[in-house]
Length: 275
Length: 300
Image 1: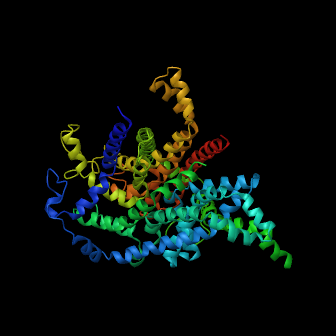
Image 2: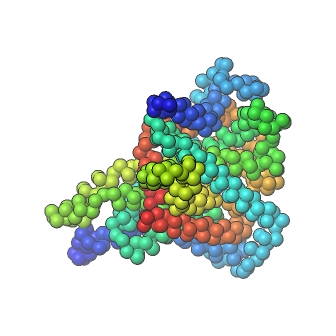
Image 3: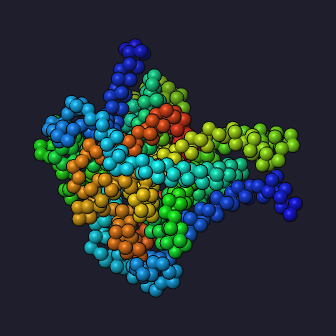
């Protein structure tokens, strides 16, 4: 068997595997486009006879998705901004030194990373009620997400800083730069890509966050899309085409971003998670 | 003042400032709730005392009541099943895919990365899609199984107590297998190729090479991944909210969902805190193991 023949065969199998694995996504889009009766046909149709493109603007209007998506963006941007500002510095210090204190700090950070949100929400809710932060529900969610996701960001960005040669920074110091100057004009630009990729990853997570938003935000005007989608799915719903349309509108920006930046995101993720 | 300023700009103060602020932030927003959680699990908390710091102390009463509830042991059992089945499923599926893509044909790495969409999607969306796929009468999952003659009648995944937990497990395996695959691929590609060449010269077959080279070389990656899987699986909440909501009659309820349900549906914050404390101890133990295996990796 020649090399190219083997490669082609493997590629076909790989495409087949990817198609099977990603079938749920395909089914989401296809269901959204089906009519009410076609959706419940047996055997199910794998291609819509009469694609209902109008369902997307219809559901968007019906459910007030503009508001939901806007809230998701506000919460995700706020969390990412807070995490990036605070987390980058911490990651830098944890990458720059090797001593007992750094090990302790790193250990603490890793431990905080693993606390499940659904278990932490009980004390956070009570504490936010006591301190009055709950009067600003979106801020409360941003703070909670920042505390939850910052350790992950620190771990990822630390790996980036580790790959920036220390000699460059030392050279800048010798040339008369202050520590702040060297950090700002030498180290940060070199680590920019890694920071950006980690920030995007955090943004995606925060964009889909559910537990904190569901528990801390009571007003429907302030809820993000994840809570909206959850409210849409009643226990005995049969509006599956509309629910799938909602899900498609919600998830498509994330999927598009991911497919465009796939290579960078995957390499950023793998460098951080295991090292 | 001048000394302080110059230290902030050009010395130790700079580092301390960079690490100190985030650390203080994390302590206030993660450390304090963590400790407060333990305190609250020993208090009597109701809707009226929710707004005050000082509440009656009840000792281990909350824990005693929690364990005495008839659903406690079944829910713990479900949690164990959910953990074991999800981790095993994610790992085996991920490992199989990683081994396949390891053969390295043109386009392999790009296609492999594409699988990760299952992991970056919002959990609620994954849950919604699987909720529809697993629907009893019209679900396409049942249709495929029927066509393959695995089942003869429809399985009511979400409403049949025997299967409701498994409907969440299936969705969770799909969600996490890609992440496992990516990390395992990294581990596989770091095994030096000459080991295989040497083994091949010695006449070792493919299976022998897998058992004697691949698996031992992957040991620390696998250890890290299993504990990471445990951590992620214990965090899984969205799928329960989107697929079964713990029902029917707690047949798919697990500890992390129950904790939230106790606090925010039944407003029993003290019991919610108590179950949280129990589970957080479990997570902490897993993460100690995770930290140890990743450190092992760094030292190589």
